[in-house]
Amino acid sequence: MRQPRSGRQFLQIPGPSNLPDQVQRALAQPLIDHRGPEFADLVIGIVERLKRVFGTEADLVLFPSSCTGAWEAALVNTLSPGDLVIGFEQGHFATAWHQLAQRLGLRVEVIAGDARVPPDADQLRERLVADADHAIKAVLLVHNETSTGVCVDVATIRAAIDDASHPAVLLVDAISSLASTNYEHDAWGVDVTIAASQKGLMLPPGLSFNAISAKALAASTSAGLPRSYWDWAPHREVALTGWFPYTPPTSLLKGLHESLNLLFDEGLPNAFDRHRRHGAITRAAVAGWDLETYCRDESAASATVTAVLFPDDVDAEQLRTFMLDEFDLVLGVGLGPLRGRVIRIGHLGGLNDLTLMGTLTGLELGLRTLGFAVPGGVEAAIERALALGPVPAS
Image (cartoon, rainbow, N blue to C red):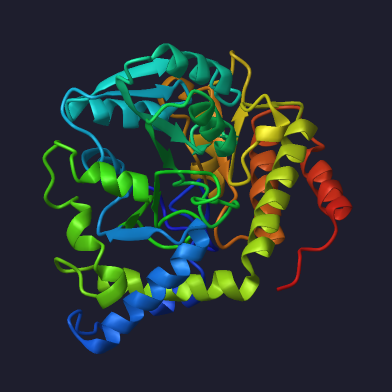
């Protein structure tokens, strides 16, 4: 058993993210009647503001669940048994979503590619053009693949579907990008956007979301996969009445109200700028250590998570464990085939420059303690921060 330590633990995984003090206090408030007028007003106000974060005027439903539930909800409300869906080789979470689809009785086709760069929209366009009978019913896309640190231009994928004149619905996982990166459900032509509470919304796990286009809503009327808990129909009334079809997570919703206060007080554009800034500072440190980011395309580098790739003769998981045991620094584990190859630094949610610099200093201290010749990463991060100028004021 690990011995108790003085000082704070640096939790810098890409979610659950650190909780701001204001959110912690909101979560600790006394419970209220979830069938009463105070709670109804709270929920109606939350949905109205949350739609602005999603960039939508469409329906938005809330589920008491982790993000896996929102994945399932997007599938079962739009598809029928045996339907063919197509996705991309993006990383661990894309693969997990594909496997969930298969367990639900869907057929999944994966476009092979290099997970270190964004998916090739031209490959998708060619495949959809070849699908003259429109057997493909949905395209599954992860906006920001948390395991690799690669972010995708959703609009290019939508354009590929439109160029092929294909009716497939576009389902997008925005779990590790929403509220930290600009997202435009309506403008980008997304049919279902999937997100959850424990990332940019700065909450514990337990709330998930589907934003639903008119096209997806129409598909739900004929979708044949079994659904009950995940059925959109009863949830669509929540935005109007504040009345959930079953007991809602009342404390999490109190916390969400406060996290939205923080986001809008800062200003969404400022929050997005702050995350881009922290991504750039982190990548400067990685370059200063003479290491690689797993993402090969700088223009697609995530604003919320950086996967640091280590040489083949280095066990990244042993390094990560050492950081935890010796310095109480918690970094993200490599997932799937990247276990032992990468360490993931989360830089999302309630984060400032000093917290990030503490994380980067801790990692450099650990690497140097283990004998790695990596001085210069923190200095490079500081220089990048100075070059970027002060954090935007709210």
